[in-house]
Length: 355
Ligand code: IPM
Ligand code: MN
Image 1 (cartoon, protein in one colour):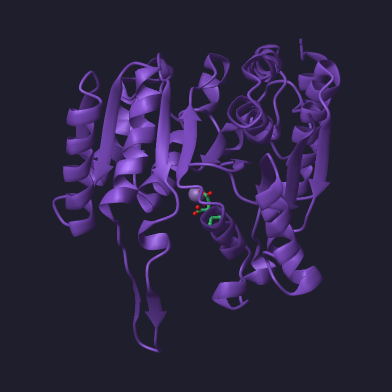
Image 2: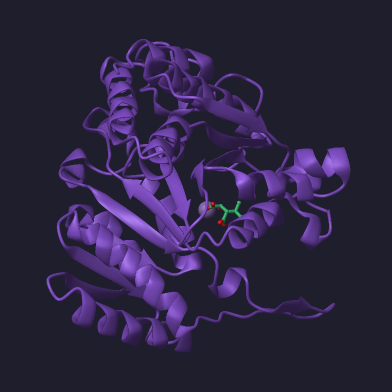
């Protein structure tokens, strides 16, 4: 059976990191004798420049019919003045929403050999192994918004069923891990958060009684993520809080460039992308870190192609490359070895891929 993966390189460093990630995916397919069809399509600013829309209908149709979608990154300063609904970022939001990808999984498990790259003291990082489950198709990202000359508003809305389904994803994942879930909200101020907390309590007490459920306000969670990061197992939170916490958590791993993500719905293709953005300041210079993109391929193999052993092999190859000192510039230690380029890091991973 042939599998189809739609590849959306996007903007900035998106195409460079995507190229390395796809080399790894192709190598896995070749080793496993897997019939793989890769279809590239435009998205973001690149699509806007080509056809006047950041998410062309053809791109969306290809994605809908695929087994999985891989995305590099979207956005850049050259589209800053484009109308809101035509901005590159809007394409990503529309894609997530159109594919019903309500659950965004962002694992944060620092490689011990990158401890020196983190701004945190190395002893704080011992044992850190968490996954942030970010609700991805609701909340303030998708609420009614508007603006006039002198004012603007964005509304945040959540339904009980939206909160229930994301809590169930968190619960199921926690059962396979250390059985602890931290639900993050702002229930001392926001009604959506009070609904979130009540719903979480009900879902976990009735459906996951064996899981320990903890609640934190977002401000405290941001602090605890730095003061006791190893205590977290599964974090479940809304769209905006999850966006912010996952960038913060990336500093535990040493760089925004190393973290992957998977966005999953109830059915249909999953979307896989590094959590970093398009980094236009370093685009086209072969210095971007393709680690998050390559590790997103591992998530794709695991969650959409049902190839857990291949996923493990990719993760091991990345770890091995890092352990043997292969570093892109974002992770290089001052005075250390000369950093490896984007393609060079891809080479190092491919050379270590054992399947
Ligand atoms: C992310 C990004 C996106 C988001 C942007 C590019 C719209 O920051 O995936 O975390 O805010 O969701
Ligand atoms: Mn983000």
